Length: 344
Ligand SMILES: C[S@@+](CC[C@H](N)C(=O)[O-])C[C@H]1O[C@@H](n2cnc3c(N)ncnc32)[C@H](O)[C@@H]1O
Ligand code: SF4
Image (cartoon, rainbow, N blue to C red):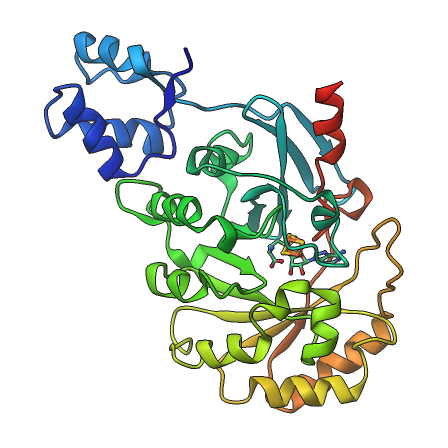
């Protein structure tokens, strides 16, 4: 019989486990400390719990930590890890070391339902939501875990489509009983779903990145079908109700496609759309996806686009692409093959 993983449980969930097993109320905090501070991999290591309670806990529970089953290294130092989730599914996480920083790009789903035209994960389709255990395990079992400075939920999947588990994982990363990280070290990237965006803003303090890609609704819906259910205009209207001028950062991601959204007309539309919002724009180079007839713009056009926006008061940066040679860059993650291999 499979056991329940403790890793990924919030303090309230651990308290209910402790209560169910008749353990003293302080035991939940002790377990949380073993899981999230001391980062143990077995219940036997939780030595301040009595032997009786450890044995009782082991009957129905396990730590639930799983090391990656594969890894690929890029020439630029980026490492892509493959984690098994459940019986036959896999997800990828990308470790990106940089000058004085180390960022982990974490997945929230196996595949994705949103079917954005330019995204490899979208091409894979949706298989499953990750549990908080499977999200936190990508950090817990990362070989370079202790070097991490930042986490971005920009791997496989749409975080707002799996919000309950994502919020639990974010609580564990930021709560004093968990990793106790500042929410400023964590960014959640989303295309913006009607069901979920407001709740995320109100229940978390982590930075928010919205995948924008076109200021024009017709074009955005061609690139991102989800625009039809919750338009970028409605997203911006909602965002205007919140204060992003202090600690919490709001950014927009914009893939610059050649001949599609890279002219001054689009820059002007962006300025119009985002007027009055405290935010910045991150320009992303398009990472080519097999079978997709889109092309990235050249660096000169991208720089001109950035300079136009910045000179008109919208702070804009160009994001460096990392790990493209190992298919680890933004939007290139897919575990469709591993899933298939595992079936045969
Ligand atoms: C893979 S998504 C995951 C998070 C969330 N689902 C979202 O779309 O924001 C992370 C970022 O990668 C971008 N992206 C997707 N496909 C891309 C591609 N082929 N080239 C560059 N960026 C891409 C997305 O637009 C998004 O900004
Ligand atoms: S860009 Fe994000 S929302 Fe769109 S298909 Fe890819 S993972 Fe899903």
